[in-house]
Image 1: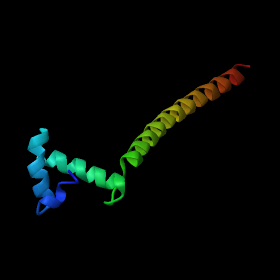
Image 2: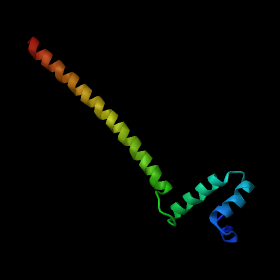
Image 3: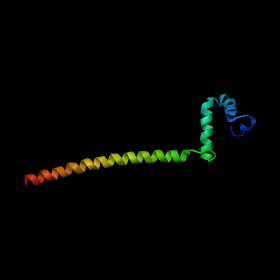
Image 4: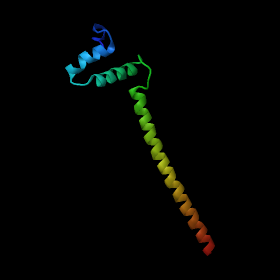
Length: 89
């Protein structure tokens, strides 16, 4: 794709010429080209590696929040149990 880009008046013209040959839409191919340019540093944006790292961090953050909530509930439960035990003594 990148090699044939110079043979066309614009990126969109190149995309529209090549997309049917590889069996995808022009829009899909354009997104792939843009993604490759971002990953190569030729276009501003979040790279594929950075995007995957963000997803991992978001998953980890979600798990930690869930674990923290469980610990808060357990702490409150045991604190109440301790108060109840002291009142019965």
